[in-house]
Amino acid sequence: MANEDFLHAVQFPRGKNIPLPNCEGPKLRPFRPFGHVHNLELVNEVAVTNLSVVWKIKVDGVYYALKVFGFPLANDILAASLSRDELRMRVDHTDFFNCECRAYGRLEETGHENMVVRCYGYVLLTHGQEKTFRSRTSTCPDVLRRVPYLAGVPLRGIVKEWVPEGTEYFTAAMAPRMRRDLKTLNRIGIANRDIKENNYLGGKLVDFGSAWTVPHYQVDKWKKWIEEGGKRAEHAIEELEMERGIDQDSFDHMMEEWNEMGQGPRIWVRNFPNRRYSNLRSRQSKRSRGYPAFPGPDPFSYDWRGSKKTVTPALRKSPRRGKTRGGRRTRKVHVS
Image (cartoon, rainbow, N blue to C red; front, side, top):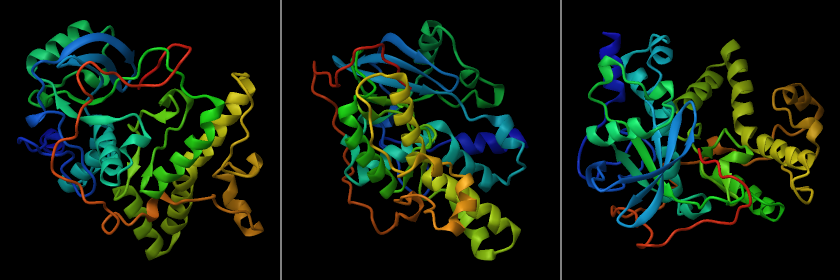
């Protein structure tokens, strides 16, 4: 029964232009109708992580980056002994593919899709494409390995703008804009939760696999505990406080690492005025002494029902044939 519940949680509706994931909140539309791209050409492997594989691909003469995701970690999720509805919600909000779909969906609906490396939609690999993909990928991470009860679930991928090899993660001159963009990201209800150097290309974020986008079941659960009071409320306040400021704290840490490594001109752009007070957990004890919990904005206070920008139902446009996009870079690219 557990395997059947999990299969139900990872299944999704099929149709011509159905956006995913199938839950409340922002969604991502398919790259092509039904999510299938029959003329997809694998060019070369770019990166392999324990969660995904990135390939440079070619479709209709245009180069893109294709990030292929594995399946949700069944054992970890089933161990929580959740009901079928809870299981579905957990997969919809924490699966790496769904996290990216929801984040890019929010960026599109609010008109901020150019603030990050562009996303053009999701794809579902056919059986033949999956077979070719597996045979040409150097090392398939464990999450890409199939188990019997997921036999009918296709491998899922997200098509993104191709950023040429040699593009820098970022430069010192890009830091002020990166800080502004991160604050904008938080204002529209997205917590990236994985801010680090190699998740940027040309000063733009490229990875949202760990992102929490409101509405999010865990945030809603913590807020409910706070309303109810008691010991659970204390735990919820601490966890919510940490998640609210984690992007800005991580950004400051990334800037400090840049300075320590001597990669270029020193960067003094920060979110927290004094790094000594930027450890999110230790700041809990400092709040009584007047230190701010975090400098804001709060990604979890976004009014996702009332703030949505109207989005037309048309599929997003791809770059024109023969054109590629990206910034400058002087060292090896790492896409994830």
